[in-house]
Amino acid sequence: MGLWVTRSRAGLQLAAAVCCSVVGLVLAIGFRGFHGVREDAFAGFVLGVLLLLIGLAGLLFTGRQTITVDPRLRRIEVADTYLLMRRRSRIISFAAISSVNIGFLGKRSNYVRNYYVVLHLRDGKDYSLFAPGRFWEGASSRGTAEGWRQRLEAYLGAGPQLGGQLEMGPMGGYAAPPIG
Image (cartoon, rainbow, N blue to C red; front, side, top):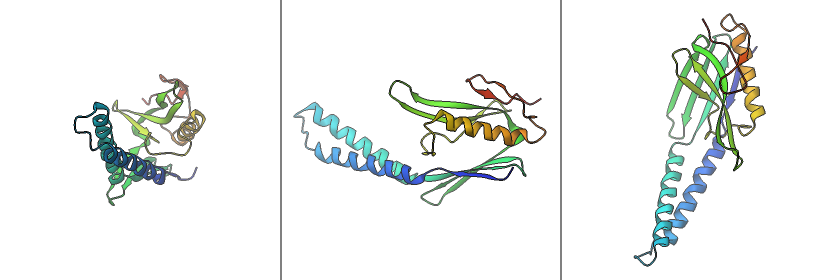
């Protein structure tokens, strides 16, 4: 198995931040002259200011996340590069992973769904790969997330740690059995 490198779609994240800023600015300007006339105008102004602030924060912290699964070094590197040229990286050893599942964020009733891979670490903590908010290609499809999980388990199972055996996980789907 070769190196597996995947990147989030920073362009969509930036577009969402710009849209939020523009809508916030329009609302804040449109409802700025409330002067106690109507409570609805004040609510529109406050909503506009909040959206503007959220959009500006999104612009400042827009970035690309790169996930690299390296079977030779037996590790996963998650690198965050932000618009302000700041870079943060986390390395997770294959040996530190006890199981792999699929996480879900959203409501089925309003058809907003985001699936992602959850790494259960030996120290009891969880770490999310392909996390919502990063605009990963196919994140709204359970099948895509299942493909990510199976591919990651194939990488993990290629060595002595997991042995490639699968069992039913606590969140549904299959998870690699705990190590040790």
